[in-house]
Length: 350
Image (cartoon, rainbow, N blue to C red; front, side, top):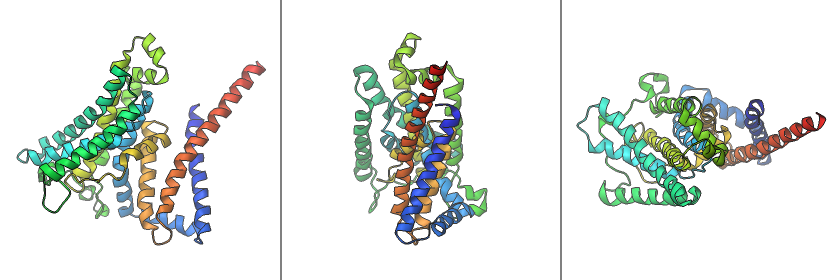
């Protein structure tokens, strides 16, 4: 699929999804223009709404990049949820275990711990696939359960805080700034500097994939494993490395919650952010810029579900999110079929 068609697929899917959403809104007796107008006004029409959208989009950028990088390598990393839990817990543990460190040391240490824990959790299914041929989908799904259960055990039995389901709070030096300190208009919104870390991660992933030899080898492996092997790429090492990098990105998603919002690790805090990364990567066409745009869209829909709850059930926007993904899949196949037919027609005419 050429670049123009690749760019058009999400737009067509979005247009179709919002049109279908308008039909559903009208079917329950509401005015679609009123609902969509309220959605836009209360999410993007004021600083607080924009802050909420950026806050909700931040972890989706990380998990979307994690899944996109896996897709680029020909791997289906469905374990971003578990990697997210491992990273968030590691960030929290580091934050409350070393309270005497200065902020300039402790904050980077927490980020590094989150990335390393996510990388370790992602490398395991990568190794199992490279060494034994075990499919990464099964392995990552199982590791999701393990991560949630293991962190839950530590919260409930090791780092117990009475009458709560979270760890002790991290040291004040481990907390990152909320953007309201820089932009007072965002007051009340928990958006914090991890949003800029997410944007930096998107730039880094783009540079890695299209400006480095390792990134090129990773993409070649995703296109054709046999071609990559013929070109001298070590398939096993590439698989483990890709899964580890993917896991590191997913692990960093937890810093938004731990360092910038609640300041502790809490069981069941994610609400499926790791799984949503798959949808974000798919809508963003596995490109870092597309992932950022898709994360902002899903962030707006997530916050929008709350602001229009008095007009229509919030489940309507959850349906809309699912329709967006289905539309992208269907539209992508339709475009690819059209492109394939046009190419055949040109070859026949020549």
